[in-house]
Image (tube, rainbow, N blue to C red; front, side):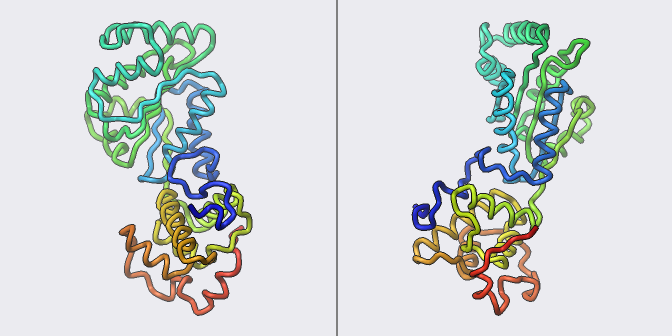
Length: 297
């Protein structure tokens, strides 16, 4: 709605996980490198965790792009509310196994044959499970058993399970100790710090066609980072609403008052007892700062 008003070629703060807008912070680079390394080295189990909105699904989308480019067969399960039967049925559909997809036995036999055939020509296969913190014990146990498929060169099936911090806590439970011991790599995503948050906002607007933006002042972006706790999804929601409010008010400069209203509408949960003097967005020269692009090198 506001793209033409600001000169954007596309929505800079779309909520969908778009790899083309990936902000390559150090932690995201490390996480993606670990995922790719784990697949290429046939490490078996890889765990990716992070708070809601920190970019786990975007990392998985980037991994999918890599797997497609390398012609590596993979299955992606993004609905973790599954029974064991549904899990094997979806697995067989994604990997296009030629078998009775309602029979666990036939799915396992067909899967094993496919993995052995691919391994014989030096290829691997990947299973990606998102929202894995919601998986029932019996489904997680089936996934663990799939990780036992291996030959002398490594695991035949590379399994990536991604989820919220509850997944880490689940793996610490005594009944999951066998799965925990099989995890070869762990990746953790946290909220962005202030420099990365500022760079994140600027980079998304630049990729959408607006370089050296002056819509958000430096102090305002610092306040956005504080209220969002550096969570990319929350930053997107706040910034999208700010741009929409600016468009509705026919101004190209966002203000603290707009942020206050949006924070209330989104019911943002952030520390309310922050000292006023520590909030740069409330300084007397805000009006002057709002005309200056903000950069942290």
